Image (tube, rainbow, N blue to C red; front, side, top):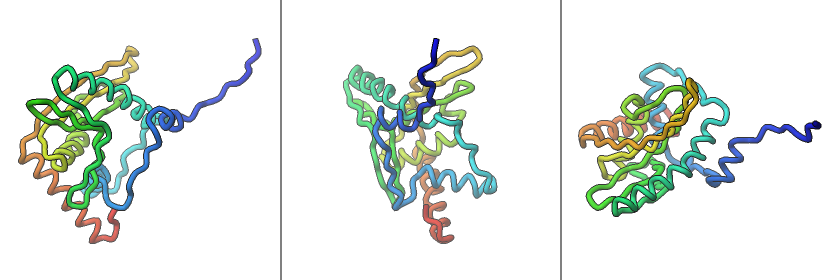
Length: 192
């Protein structure tokens, strides 16, 4: 046997091929950036640990599969699904993975990929803050999380679909936190 080649492929490039190149508008602050900034102000300037190599790209690849899951869910429930929704409110950009429109209600859709241990939205404060902000921008109170948990011990993949509903007070308080953080950063001269 002769090895003809043995190359490592670039996961970001693969994600670009599958889902398209992601271009982010940097002219205004994003809700997720404001959440990170608020966290840093509360906990000191301790940055989040970077995601292991290729994980963010794998998340983008998971989004393609999750889009199909959400399209099927919407169709089976008499509704529709819109992918990759950009919204702006009060000068804050919110990049929603999608919106689910059902006859009885509407929801923000936020797709997540998690490694190590199975995750539920209520165990992830950043996910909750992010989606409460997205609810403020979209005018709804519900969120649907398609989550792919890739576990190592024992090795397995578990996909879940979890829906939650926030109170209007939770949404309003989170949006006010985002506005306060934005105002503080603008005052400090670091808008984004």
